[in-house]
Image (cartoon, rainbow, N blue to C red):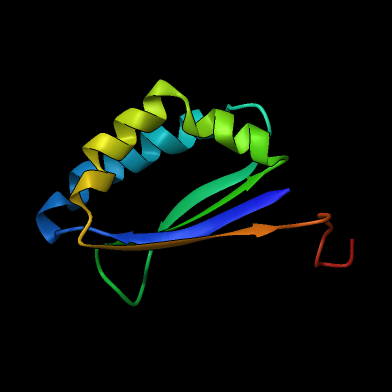
Length: 101
């Protein structure tokens, strides 16, 4: 499994448009083959900063997701406007509940 996590920061005046874009890209991404988990959340400590988490069954499925036309549209429309960003990827061997169930 592949985990990708990070954050994007936008100008305050872009917030409402960015929120709409994040809702759209999240819904579409969750439907892609191999998507285990995908979400965005606004930071409670840094306004206009959105953190993301993605988990994919394989690097190949993540690459296929990134090749989707809607993903390219998201990158061009929103990521091109960031005022700060960082991201990391991690290899994960397995997934299990941390709740003991």
